[in-house]
Image (cartoon, rainbow, N blue to C red; front, top):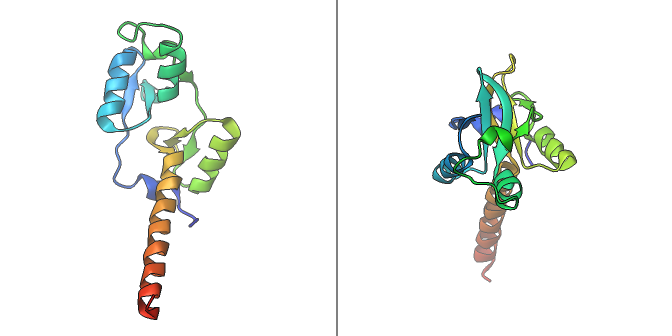
Length: 146
């Protein structure tokens, strides 16, 4: 895998956030609309937590909580691990593997939230490289006459 730096992965992306007061249903709708699996929960410009699809499933649906009245703050992961944008994506992937989670909020040098990386970010690059390799093999086979 190339040594991609997180700020390269985040290029062109905007950070999608939630407030602590947002309901689980509103958060789930936002994630569905943006086609993402997690939201950074912000309080006073800082990361207060992270709300993920797993939280919705395991802490809300499985616990029979009402998504229309349950605030994100009551089911989010508080004070999640974060990573700096200048670090390699491989560091974030290591954090995810060690911690058993799939998303890591990204912060700037002052600790302000600027993005999110996920395990899918690495998979996406691997798929691109796999497609390139397949195309290369097809081209080779075509030039040999198979």
